[in-house]
Amino acid sequence: MVGSRAYRRYHRCSGRKGSSLPRSSARRHPTAASGRPRPPARTPAAHALHALVALSRAQFDAPDDGEILRLAMDHVVAAGRYSAEAGYLKVGGGLVPSPRNGRTHAMAVGRRVRELAGQDGDVTLAGRPWGRALGLRGPGVFHGYLVVTSRSRPTKVERSLLAMLVRHTAAALSAASAHRRQCEDALELHRLRQERTALQRQLISVVAELGYERAVHALMADVAASEGGEEAVTRALHGLTGLPALVEDRFGRLRSWTGPGRPVPYPEPDPVRQEDMLHTVAKEAGPVRIGDRLLTLVRPHGEILGVLALVDTRGEADEHTVLALGLAATSLALELTHLRDLAEVELRLHRELADDLLAGTDDASAYARSEVVGHDLHGSHYIVVVQWSNRTADDSFARTVGRAAAAVGMRSLLTRRSDHVVLITGDRPHARALYEALARENGTRSGTIGVSAPCDSVDDIPHHYQEAQRALDVRRHSPEHYGTSFFDELGLYRVLGPGSGHRELETFVQEWLGQLIDYDSRHHATMVETLTRYFDCGGNYDETAESLAIHRSTVRYRLQRIRDISGHDLANVEDRLNLQVATRVWKIVLGGPG
Image (cartoon, rainbow, N blue to C red; front, top):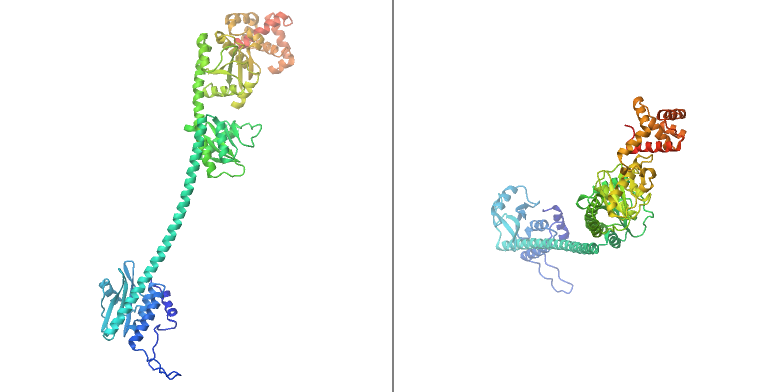
């Protein structure tokens, strides 16, 4: 756009106010001191040419197109008796008038130059016998118009000088346009160079990222091929990041740690906090920072198999660390899925063999199948029955029992029934180790374990299975419901086992407690229960009274009534033994009251 700033430049180009054209003296120069005469004064044509040369220099030094056009309009008188009526510059697809255009003929002149459409042509204005719109053209380009009028018809010399002014003006406009294009090209070249540099840097970064990613992929592929399990993954991840790497199972128990700073002992997980943490991490698409750890879940097909984490106490993890952690989690997911599939196949084979052993099978088949699953059936075995109050005996609980048994060093076959899990193990279980391990796994101590006597033959496994069930049943009905009971430590309860014969047991109870049972039924009393508690408390009156929530004197009274009703003397050793056995049979085998 043509601006007034360009017009102010004219005076700096001309060196003084008014016209920039040099003045020529009309007087002859005086004689020099040597007596030699000075050169004659310039002719008007020479003066005009000199002025046009000065104008051309000023135009070529002008900063923009508007200034070039202004100089031409201001100094058109250098070419003759002309007046500059208007000037136009082509901007985009239209002609923009110069701010120096006169207002008197503005509409008529503007309409005329638009009609000429880039051609030279006459312009008719009132009081101006001669007028011309002269196109400012460069090589292959049209820059605009200079509209000139005269009060008299220009001479041939004046026309020639005017044409020269127009050519110089067009050349200056072409030079300015070329300069602009050169500057624009230089700026575009600079921008392209900067863009190329940025792209080169980005390409180098992408190549480096791809190289790093390929290296991590290759390393994790080698880890998966090595079948090194969790330890191989944490070892590789530690090597890539320099940070301690660890794997926990979904319950928060440590499975592998590589790097410094491993807590000893490793803290026991809080089930509630562990579930909250898993829920928080599962909501995010990538690794999540919790405290000083960067965690990601190992969950192929949506099932959480474990947690992979980096210990980043200083917050040093960058995008490369996140990339390595994600790829390591993928590799670990494949590894754990493979191990899970193998474990499920092995568990199914173990379960099928265990089911057949509990139901009874021939020795040759049992020994052959046990070798396939890697379990030695030779030697003594124990049958272990496990029941937990807050767990149903499903596959998940079976896996929990198997994991706990393996943790305490028990080599076993495993299967499950409707309300309990069964282990056939080659080692006698520790009195508390399996129970404590399962209590940690399940988060509660409300469980019962029954263990059979040692079994030296495959044929005897079904019978010893009944012994384990008997031990569990006795434990459940004892004052301490939860814990581990061994069949070979039951004492009298071994006689009261399922093999004793239900009819004989009922006859025995009727013989020793029949009258008391009848009395309780008729009078809604609790004589048999009182006698049972009395024996459970070792004959101590105070403990018996406390367990029945009655007074000590009431216990004495009831015991006397028991003597009177039953006809048996509690002071007699034989009577006392039989009454105690009868109460145990009544309570455990026959189910107590009713």
